[in-house]
Every structure is written in structure tokens, then in C-alpha cells.
Image (cartoon, rainbow, N blue to C red; front, side, top):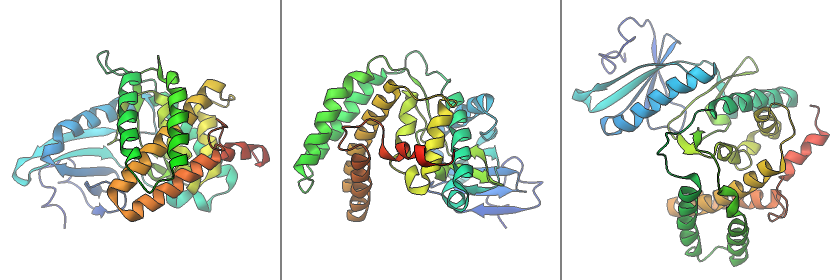
Length: 306
């Protein structure tokens, strides 16, 4: 049925089964071949950026067995499309799978995911990559300007965020430039037979402080599974107690993400604004108006069976 659409792409001609994969937030057309290969189609105009993604996935796969193998990349000029072929990771995404598992299983999945993320964070940016401190502060300042223009937002919240971030921006100084998945949360993880089997969707990759990858745990992941989120931090530290500097940076990046989320929601739609504002207020509450660098959900670890 789909062979005409995929004609000319490696692994398609000999495929016995082809099905379209419609789940996920990506705009890519996705097809699974023989439950073994994943074909992603995207506009030809994106080819340069996506080729870099493809090459980065190859690099990541050399650091972790929990990353798809990047097998082929090419163009379909007649259709104004390009493609990449990856190994397919069967299973359910974490958003669907985690709630049905025990707290111990959720924690263990997070632990392994955190360990694998730490391996990927060994990948260094090129020497000429812009300074994280400068790039992050410039981006943060732009979001601050946009935040100030949201008239209906509580002025006390604006003051809290600008004050806390301004007082702690010094933490950015000297932070490394390494690989960032930039979308590390359960929807981009594959669970099979109650175990973590893969991290997928590298389209938002970037380079900067690797710890920045963990700040979405408190914004998105805890809504799916607190044990998973605790496990991800513990696994990232290989079971060792996270230090104060980690939590200082985690809290700073969480506050910065609150600002960007509110601004992005306001630009998108009223519904998105209301949702992301509610999520943001939860983060602020988890940090007790940012008087605490360790969020309250992580402190729940003391009462959990792991």
C-alpha cells in the first residue's frame, strides 16, 4: 500500500510489511518496515538540519545501546522530500506504559534512562560552538522582555522569576558545551516488557550544559510518573547523591523554563497558555517559590520503596 510512497528508499523493496506510524508530536511521515526499520519522511527544505541529526544519532548510538541505529539518509527530489532510515524500537512510549507499572518498575526505568543520558552527555560540542553562558543569558533576556508584556500575568510572579534568575545567572559561568537531547521525557522513551529499551526523537538536539536536559522532569515527567522522574536523576548520578551545585543549576533551569513556557503558551493559544501557566505554577510551588532548590516531588523519595 505504501511502497509507491516510499519507492527508492533502502530496505523498502524487500519489505513484507509496511505500516504507517501516526503517534507522536513530530510532523514527519513515519513508516515501520517488517517491525525492524523506521522510515522518516520530511520536507526537502529540512534536509541539511536533519542530516546533522542523522549523523548525531550515529554518534549517540556509539555511546549507548539504547539509541536507534541510523542506517540511511537520502533525498526524493521528485516529491520534495528527504528521508532517514533508523532501526525500529518496538514497545510503548513511556507516557502510555509507565502508569500501568509498579513504582519500583517506574523508578528502575527512570534510573536506566538517566544512566544512558549521562553517557550521551559525554559527547562534546565543536570547539567553535557559542559559549553556553552567553547564549543562554541572551535567550533568557529575550524571554524576560516578552514576559513583561503579558499584562494579565501576576506581577508578583514576574518579580519572583526575574529576581531569582537574576540572582543565580552566575551559575552559568564555565558550564560545558555538550550534547543535549532537549526533549528528555517519557513520551520520547520506549518501554517494552516493563523495561526501558530506548530513547528516541532527536530532532530538537542542541549543545550546551548537559544538566539542562533534566529540567523538564519537573515540568512534564512528574505528571506521568514521580518514581520515574526520581529514578532518572538518581540514574544520571549513577546512584550517588546529587550535589548542591546540581540542584542549584536544576532550580535555575527550571525557573528559566517556566518563563519560556509561559511566553510560548501566550504566543500559541489561550488553551496552551492556561495549561502551561498551570504547569509553571506547579513548578514554582514544588520549589516553594524558589526558596528550595530541591523540588518537593524529589523529596518524596524518602517514603517510597526504592
